[in-house]
Structure formats: structure tokens, C-alpha cells
Amino acid sequence: MLREVPSDKEFVTSSVDPASRPAESDQVEIEPITGHSLKDLVFSLEAGTPRLNQIVNTLLTSNPVGFFQTVAELVSQQESGTPPRFLGRILATNPAALVCLCDPQAFSLQDAAMMARWLGQFDSALDAKIVHHVLSLDKPSQPVLSRMLDLMAEISDGARLRLQLVPLLRHPEKRVRSKASLIIGRSRKDIGWIEPAMTDTDHRVRANSVESMWGQKHHHAANLFRLMAADAHHRVVANALVGLHLAGHPKEAAEKLLELSRRPHIMCRAAACWAMSRIGDPVYLPHLKDMAKDTDSAVRGAAMTALVPLNRASQG
Image (cartoon, rainbow, N blue to C red):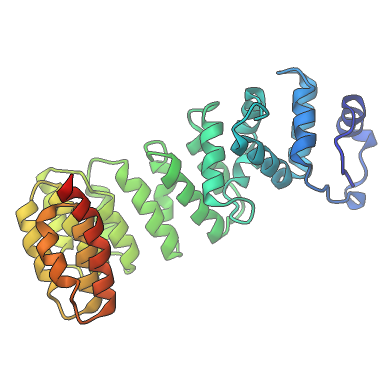
């Protein structure tokens, strides 16, 4: 098993010559290399040499997760030993490396986003390539798809992803549909695409679709927010009222929010607190102070949480 990075000559000879490779059945798993040995390797080679490409691609083939995790560790250190740019250019064009970013067992979302942003320096269309490689897998799992969509929500504006992600709006898994609708929606100005999502049986899909329209001010968007404010689920209603406020109808949104805050259902009252906080208008302060005395602890907690940013806004 490989515990140290061999010398350049030894590594290339054993890695590149097909005749010297063991049969597939005889191969053993290569342990992840350490950050120190990787530093020694990448800084001992000259940028752009075929030898570097051979070594990196061999490591990616034999142990993609271990290799990529080591590179991520070096990137996170943000010091003089951070992997050089030529290594980033190699990784940005390697499908196995890009798919690793969408493996929740290999990377946290925070680390995956950090690596994607670093690699994005070397390929402006990295987001589209990650999506392409993941969707090209043979039946990608729901966790991998979910992580891919979470990653795109972190690093991409979605403009290049619409055509690739539209089929996911029909995915059998609700969470996948919900996340895809959020990314697609925020990259589009028209609202025609969103109508099917508004009738989805899962409230998360409807809520994310509404949220994806936040910031649009034309009358079609305002009418859509009014329509979804009558939804049966409190999360959808709260998102719709935030959207209505942002669309330039604060008084109408406030009237509907106050009505939501007086409903007998606990989650409706808590959702109203969240929406008031998200809007951030100090006009809601007196009402939130009253809601902080609600008979239910969940509503009181939501009101107290909402009061913090609004109090700060009123003092600023």
C-alpha cells in the first residue's frame, strides 16, 4: 500500500507503464496521502509538465476522494503551501474530481463550496460541468443529487443550469424537486415555468418556488404572490407575503401578515414572526412584542428571535 509518495522517476515508471500495473483483481486500495507528501510532490515538479499530469491523474484514478481531500486541506490553510494554480487547472478538468464535490461522505457542504470556488478560478463554467458530470452518472443517488443542488445554491446564480436542471422538477424525490425549483427560479425573470411547481403536492417545492421569485416587481409576480398567500401551508404563505412586500406592496403584505399572526394554528403564528423578521421593517416591532407574550412557547421563541434584528434596525 502506498504510504509515501515515491520519487518522481519511480512513481512515473510504476504508474504510467501499463505493463507494470498489477491486474485489476490484484490491486489494493491506496491509502490517502498526507498533506505533507502532497506538498512535496506538487512543488517538486514544474508546472505544465506531462509528468505532473500523469502523476495527478494516476492519483485521482486510484484514490480520487483521498487525493481531493488532501488538496482541500491545503487550500483551506490559505498559506504559502497552498496548492499552485497548475494543480487547480488539472483538477478543474477532471470529472472524477468534480463528482467528488457532490459526495456528502467525502466533503462537508462548506468544504465542497470552498473547493468549488477555488476551482472556479480556472474554469468559469465549473458549475455547469459539475452538474453535467453528476447527471451523467448511472442513476445518481438522492444524497448525491441533493448535495449537488445544495452546492449549486452556494456557488452559482443558476443561469447556466436551467436546461440541465429542468428534468429534476419531475424527480420522484420531493427534496430534489424542491431544491431544483429554487435554483431554476432565481435565475429566471419570467414566471411561466413556475406554474407547475405551484401545484406540486409537496409544500417545500411550492415554498421554494415562491422564494425563487423574491425581488421581482412586475404585476404578474405580485399576483402570483397574492395567489400563493392563500396556500394551505404556513411556510408557503409566509414566503408569498415576503415576496409581496419586496414586490412593492408593503401595506398589503402587512395586512395579510397580521391576519396570519392571529390564526389559531401555532405554526402560522410562528411563520408570521419569521416573515416579519425577514422583511426587517421596524413597523412590526409593537406586534412582535405582543407575540412574545403568546400562550405557546414556539410562538414566543419565534417572536423573540425576530425582535433581535428589528430592534437593531430601529436603532441604526
